[in-house]
Length: 291
Image (cartoon, rainbow, N blue to C red; front, side):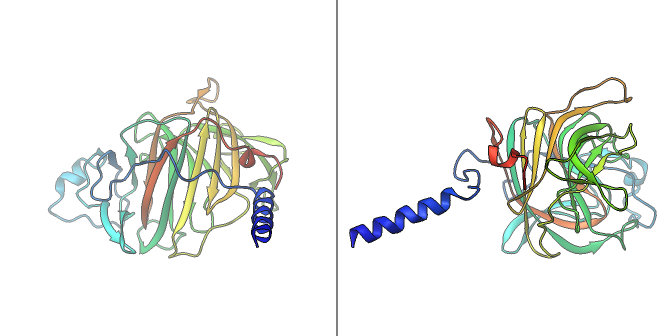
């Protein structure tokens, strides 16, 4: 009987060794959300879009439309969702909630789920948000709402895409699609995603592992040096290299550390279990150049 048990154990270990073993889960995590309030975060709201009704009592909001840590419409609140605390972002006014601290060389993990409400000018469009990382500079650099940053896209059907915000630039292996967009693909030619060249600043993820609207999704971000990796529900769908920035397309500098900012962009969305830990190196199985 002991020999049979040993054989089963050895077989189990062999099978496990043939898989891509997930990066160790157990240790070193720091929670960025305490479950009760927004301590450790700053809020920023830009001007309200046409079609958003502002209560008469909030005349100051109209006079001081763009502001740090001024949220009279309660765009960012802590609620209970699915039996656990979560940050609710209403999406009614565009802006973001950002960490007070800067981070570099880290593994970030969080969960999100879409709500029901949508607001102009995206009331009939895909629900949209985003996790911005290495966010630096003024809050209104990107479209009057966000900081210069790299974006792990959070949008219905597009989770894991890359957008460069306000001068952020990345090199990504990508193929050209039938509609002349660019899609991430390991082993493809390296292309520069930048607002200063014809490639543009958007790269589509691959593969698509997003869950249906209304279900919780898990996002992960590995950042080390000038490289980052996007994961959606445990599956890598993009590796980015040579992360950098430019304000004019001529002078470049690294963009490999900064704040983490979560967007409010026209749709109700919930975030929970937001945690981070230091990273000495990105696990090799997420960097290998094969699918």
